[in-house]
Image (cartoon, rainbow, N blue to C red):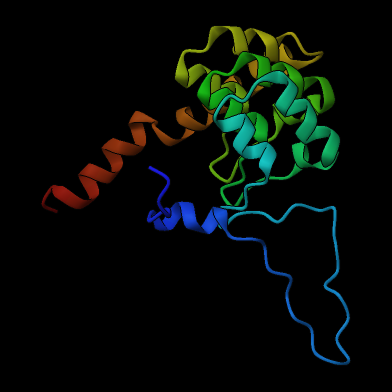
Amino acid sequence: MGGACSNPVALVFLKKPQRPRLGRGHCHPKRTTTPVPSRQGWLPLHNAARWGAPKNVVAAALDAYPDAAKIGSRGGYEPLHLAAMGGHLATCEALVAVYPEGAFKKDNNGRTPLAESREGGHKEIEELILSLPGAREMDEAEKAMRAAELDALMRPDDMDVCFNQFFLPA
């Protein structure tokens, strides 16, 4: 079985990497330490958080690019949002340790990592976030604000006035 490989995917990996040819007057491409985000705006840390990479992988991604914990994707998701959605406690612990303010950031839909953890039923992550200083007070204030908004939107008197005005004959 010593024949040549015929799998096209494997062949790509077997080829020697080609250096780009630069013509006269061209300099070498710039090398950067900033990772390039995906189409969704995800950096390697976003992927590690979303898929629950081991804590040492998350730590390595943070060491390589510490500001990645603060960068939101196109949907406004920071890595802590993604880890909370997936229920990855170890990842959440690592992210909260370096960027605790991320627990209070809202995505483009106004949702925090706390809301994501609650929706997914991830009690350990919910308790981790609520253990941060000021988190319980902020959560209570958010609940009170939502209740007041709903109360203002759903007053029964307004519903009767609208119904009478538009549906009853004059």
